[in-house]
Image 1 (cartoon, one colour):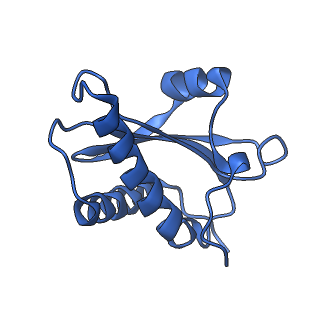
Image 2 (tube, rainbow, N blue to C red; image 1 turned 90 degrees about the vertical axis):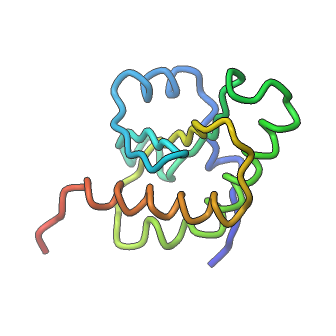
Length: 127
């Protein structure tokens, strides 16, 4: 099991991001909001993620980049836990909504809470 977040796992398409904001559902645990949209497995064989921090909350790019780096690291280390047993693929956007600078432990615990809400909102498949 590799703990990587490669280029093919990053959501970069403007069209896909726009569709995500229009049609996507959300799960929140302050200060992280997760917007997700199930996608066709043939088109997208992997889960694709993007991370965002509003300029309104953090004026300096250094601060925004630091928070995105913390979000990416927490996701990278726990991505296997989040999607085990789930065969679907998703486009996902994580948005940090607070105006306070977090530490890694806070980001990690909040990300886990968001994923628990996400998992509970998914339909359960009958085996």
